[in-house]
Image (cartoon, rainbow, N blue to C red):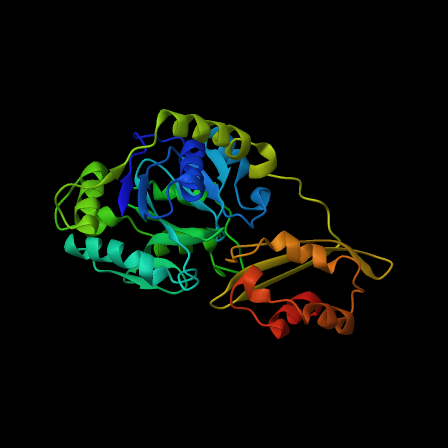
Amino acid sequence: MRFIDNRGITDPALNLALEEYALKTFPADEDYLLFYINEPSIIIGKNQNTIEEINAAYVKEHGIHVVRRLSGGGAVYHDLGNLNFSFITNDDGKSFHNYRKFTEPVVAALRRLGVNAELTGRNDIQVGDRKISGNAQYSAKGRMFSHGTLLFASEIDHVVAALRVNAAKIESKAIKSIRSRVANISEFLREPMTIEQFRAALLESIFGGGDVPEYKPSEADWEAVRKLADERYRSWDWNYGKSPAFNVRKTKRIEGAGTYDLRLMVEGGKIVEAAVYGDYFGVEDSREFADKLVGVPYEEAAIRKRLEPIDLTRYFGPVTKEQWLELMID
């Protein structure tokens, strides 16, 4: 494994572009580790409806970047007190959804620093009942990355104020709940350290000490990364997109899978437009699934028949057809 030098860049568009470029372009006979720290930003999950995830007035007032990432999952707040890591590897068919494989080196490094961390639930790292890291994954053409946040010394009040919390995820007093659920790693350290020292300690632990083998992108690589950042990660269409009006909305949280927000436009008894938002993880693009619903009568028998040949887990993670029917019809 080789460590990618991101030149200390804190622009989220450039860092996400570098991550994608490394995944799709760097030699596939190597594994890579990328660290990056972003300026205050909301990083939106691929399948989410941006305008419903952010506090737009607060974001504008504080000049917070809003950037959509390639991976699924929920929206997260980044700032200069948050260290992000990304493991870029071959997708062997067994690693997608295997968060333990990629978080174990990070958890081990945290424990060496006196932080009693562990992977919990679907994709979080916690200390006790407090979350210090969320993780997500993306796969394309035999390669994948598994990336996560590490709340080191983030402004938790900004996390709360910048994001809108889905009531299906946190049912009571959302703002109070999210404050109590998240924590900074700095609270649990044996001795105080800066985020730069923390980053160095993680590198030493993950690479076993000694010299860290690096992969330094060339100037041609950086030119391509800047182009990708401009074309995708600074694009309004990518980061916000057009959210059409729908006359049927169904929302459901499925334990261990995620939150699903289904929008349908139904005319003459048939589905004419569909979209699915949420914090779920899937290998395939859920827009392909939504397109398969167009033209289907909006009634249980027809929808059940249409779902029969579809592997829903490829789009939405561990959900069953019966659970999906309940979402669409109930």
